[in-house]
Image (cartoon, rainbow, N blue to C red; front, top):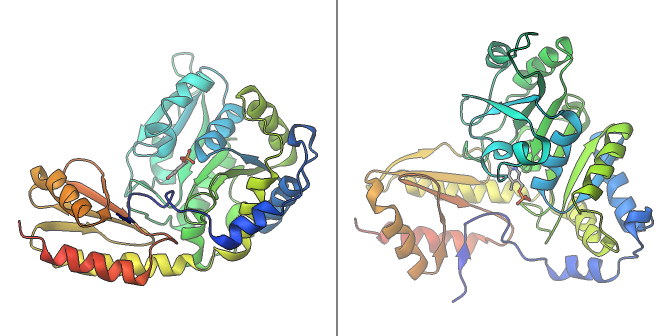
Length: 341
Ligand SMILES: *Cc1c(COP(=O)(O)O)cnc(C)c1O
């Protein structure tokens, strides 16, 4: 069966045009800095965000973990939201790769505030780990694709500057945020010491993420990437997909957001749904009236050609992306409306 797959925006397959760009890429050995297509992608991304440099990596987990490793010493502490990907979904990487501890703080749909951060900055006292990094996520995955308030980001940045702390952004879905807010890329990026963006989510490449930062930061990151076994050779074939995605697949994210809204509108009126986390971008999280029915519903949808994901007790997540058409949304709505529970 040809499924309509809402499990994640990572399930997209490269289009014909993207594949063509990949096949015709000029490549070289990137460990020697000799892959022209990777170099071009890295320059392009750095320019787009007004950052000094960038580094092409295998995944968003890798870019986040490398950034944390460069910013934080063993025994240091990272402050982030309790739902953040860097903590929850990266296999304990902060402890394993960097030997650092984590201070998890509460937030609103995955977003933390400067005020909350200030409550948890450790004092200069031998009892405490030294707070060495603040990490935030935009959009927030666990927050149902919630967009950060840029004014709050500026307050967080100000606090970080005052306390000499670097600020990292897990921007796996940063483009989803920026196409909605319209905030200038460079203005936005100037608030961060490092930024991770994913090319293999809404932008539709098969592989790849980019880490952005200052030249000396990226130089260190390159060393960490190599140590982690992430030095790739003729990966320009993959970088070509990234270039294609940056050129063609950003503004169309709006379509994914409209599709997510359509799903939300339907879900809101279904009797078996208690609540839908208000849709801001391409993630729709539905909370069921009867949480014990979650897997029955997921299985029923699968039998009708629709894949979605369990997202915690009584919660189902749908993610829209470039392989979901308007027609797929209509079909899904029909199936959803017929569910009797
Ligand atoms: C997907 C995602 C990542 C990176 O995941 P990879 O699968 O390692 O590329 C990082 N942060 C967030 C918020 C994500 O949703």
